[in-house]
Length: 171
Image (cartoon, rainbow, N blue to C red):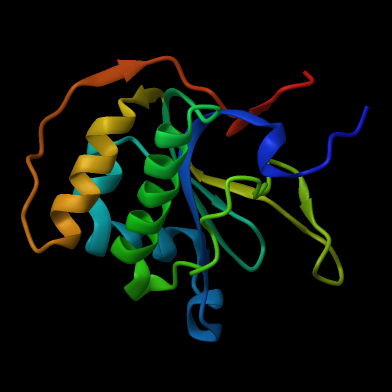
């Protein structure tokens, strides 16, 4: 059964994510060099929130697995979308996609293929997460950092990784 990608069909979110569009220059970098560039600019954030990073063939998909947040609650949904916007702002300098705040958005999965390219390119794992985070902690960190602060390097880290970002009402 195929479920239409619309807001009313989304129940929960299990990651905070963004799509990073690589410049032509960055597309020429090896996976190791891309990770070094990310760590140079966002190393504290990547380590603190144990980010999963995928190479989609044309860009990077950046995920922070979180404890499931109920998106049927309108206030939670607004906070979640605001958090996605904060992540875009935080990673703007490296090419975060400004339209990647749609909760129905589906990013590529590990070992799948990006068929927007000819020939199709396999999605590669650059860094895999092993923990799930508190949504509030991720959101507060991003809001604080985007306001010019320097957030703490320590936090409440929860275990149990979820690979999928959203759970549909009909699954």
